[in-house]
Image (cartoon, helix red, strand yellow):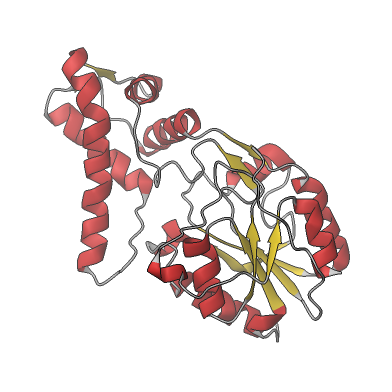
Length: 279
């Protein structure tokens, strides 16, 4: 879905690395974000996901209650991380699902056997696919191929869950490392249990860049969210580019204090424009 944003893809000299957000930047997202973050849960999707794992909700009351209870399970996990001093807590969605499913069975809101770890993963993936269908952003494969040929280091800093990295192999035929992303510069929120806009992920990114002898200002960070992407990257000294290629996911965050005084170095409305920015 196009935006009315005007692009600015003038060349930035001296870039040696390009770092990406995922949802809304590399992949079109039906919800505009990772499904966990856009937790306006849908009863039919919840029921279908549970049935894929051999569980069945009992009656209409359970059908309406399950999405609400799932949201509460996410919030509980976030509160626990907040109590540990994390300002922007992330959850490990497999643990959330396991706790949620046990609760449904204990309260007799569902019938069936408690799934094993693989079963919990299957239900989680099924639900995510239903509430947040994704597909590659137009021109993604060509964009990554050009970056590979230009010998620029590629990285990722993204709010994500365990089902996020497999998107690359599913859609592009190669996993993240096979696409030449630098492992020390690939950071997912679910592994740190801390989410953007925390600068923690970007601090680790900068450390990875420095291992390659790169200064932060030699890296360009591209994301669709002024608060979660541009603001923390700017704070850590990276060059920034707002990706405004899809109206579903563009987050300008006007009025948000975290973006006060923050302006991206460049703006893209199509991944093909990155060629001009990197020269």
